[in-house]
Image 1 (cartoon, rainbow, N blue to C red):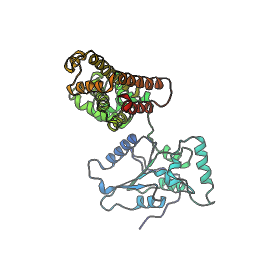
Image 2: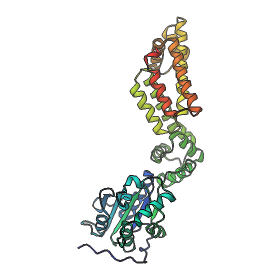
Image 3: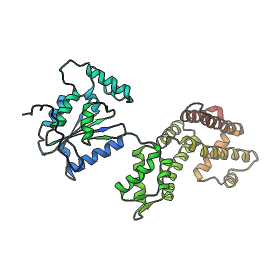
Length: 374
């Protein structure tokens, strides 16, 4: 039989030295930090044991506060401890048609006031979802831990005040770029047992971007590469991560060389996913490549054969050398110059804040593969 809701009390949840509380909130939109914290909670509760039967996941957008609390109060079938995780838990507290999408809007004093006003409009004497959650948090089921995953979370409610006072609210917001090197250093020590040199941390952010999941993936590879070395150095970062960036850019150039617009656009999109500031790093290699095509065409007009052209310009590898010469022959001198002018226009537009840099480069890719270049 399900236990009846207990009346609200001022008695806080039992203190736990392991940091796990009966009701916890993972607030914010940074999915990597949320997943990391949830993994820590699960590891603290169950260790290395198989926890499949002890973890219940619910969707706040398609369930009710009653169903969530009933799940918390129901004893697990195969385990004495239960972890109940509610995704999109903001929706549990939506009132009169407000949705999780609305709750996910940027927060501030105006958003807090609006939400409070909506709850105040509920029928007098009726308990809101937050009231019921607060009563449960004050007298929780001893065998359950409830984790609410909330992209948005109001700090002006009694529920927040109670949970925050008990160390149960964990903020998982995107980190400012300036804070990323410090986060990487701590993450490297904690997760991989290695020290990350400060210059290496800064280089990693510059090369891999600000996405925490990608940064952690790069740390994983660097730690494996470092083997028994206690410190990951800037040279290691440049060798592994920098090389990957270069390879990705040249993959884009190879697609341009063979005229594959869909592959070129796909490679271009991947580069922006790797690094939100990649635009300025793409332009240099493409200019270098276009200069090689133009020089190859000029030598071709001087009646040089393909072999001497490749040797003169030191084109490498063989596949790219052949592509460069073939493109020079296809475009002609005028087409080579128009391609260089198109890239220069895109670069100048980005540097003068005319349009979006990513869209400018996309237009260049489409234009450079247009028949007008021939």
